[in-house]
Image (cartoon, rainbow, N blue to C red):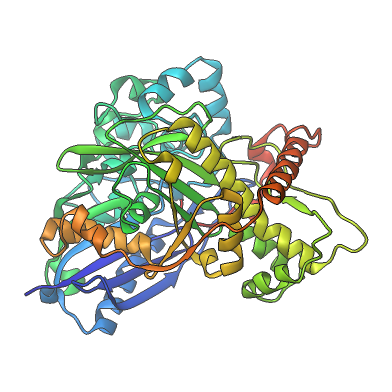
Length: 518
């Protein structure tokens, strides 16, 4: 009986492959970093060949470490950095330009023109997104207009567009399959999340030829088979989801009202809203959480650009710590009489503010402020930002169980119990940390295993989710209220700052850009 699943987790700074067993335990992990390219201020690119080569290498390494061959693997699942854009030749697979990474801000002017033209209301209504360089559509348009001859070739049907999942699928199948799943399609500005189709009006506004676009399928489906020469024999590819949606699946957030939050260099929180796409009044995104059996499940999403990178700043920028693991213990030693707030708007502020022009600030400094207080402020800033998302989500969605929501967390920062306890305190809600932290890869594995018959339906899979620790709120109402008021005042100060840059694409350099998965 074939009981292993190979999960590809293709991220912004590295590619990883994980072999899961039928009981969702991990048999082996392989990881390989690849170079980041910064050709201009605010521009971020990847060589598509680096993405491809690192993916294949880690798959082979993980299979070797697990002691499995293709005959032992029921399926491959893919999860990927979202919004990163690749355009390649339909015949030979050669990219016409480096991949433009989700963090890239070069299309700010295109976005400004679209907004000035009055297109944002219609685009938001159809896609659930805002007009921002973050998403794929303007990146495709930029490539077509900037690479000599690219638009003419695209109109002749010679070029293909895809997010990283689609590009990997095309390469894995030897150029036989050009497809994606609904979650990745929903991040392009080209996909109508209500009809589940590429939208001709959106394609016309962004001037992207329909012939370039991949077929959109369920997140759990047979996408094709890997070319036999890659791993020694064909392996079915049966699951695809963008990384944040895959983490939601891996956290078994299948019930409306469940929220997961992933803490890496940045943070992304998703709230399952079920079959209903909820329109946010608080600048959250409406997106597809997953699509199974042709039925779409939706989510509200909030993005925090700086989470773990605030700790990296303490280490690499200020030199006040040597290792990120020091921050929790250091924060515990901080002076309780000081109220230091860090608003880490190093690259602007994400949801629910969506202001790319502001920059970070520290408030409440005294002569006694030292490393412990800075560590405290950095870790707390992640909790405050999560509260802002949490508060916006609860305002937008009042479905059954909304008042009793538990936050499921994953990602590197969740190893800090101090931070997770403070998160529970400020949210005034339980925070659950799972046993399996590789939730993004697990989500991709589950989607593939569901299609292959290795893993059960969502309700039974949810029964297998295991809790490592539940953090319960213990902060007094008076303290919590005082601290949240202080944070709100600090944010207002940053937003009102006259120091804000006016052109985000010209102000953000390579060192300013977060490097977590999109």
